[in-house]
Image 1 (cartoon, one colour):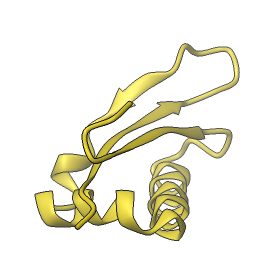
Image 2: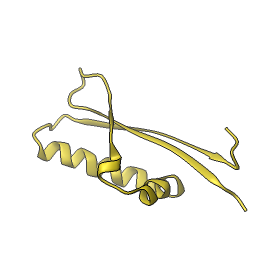
Image 3: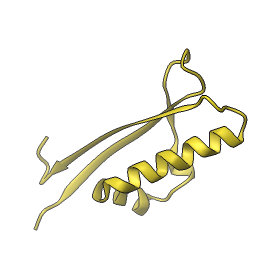
Length: 77
């Protein structure tokens, strides 16, 4: 049996000049959904799109979302 351990961090910038800030995705999705992000890469994009659209609605049309995603298999780096 294979065990995957995802390490995923989303970052946002309100404009190109800003430094990337970590986004707290724990207030948007639960722990199981966070684990599933490591299982299905298309979900990474879906959440990034959601965050970007949310920032645009809040008045930040130039917001940038980036993701750092690492997955280890069987506790190997």
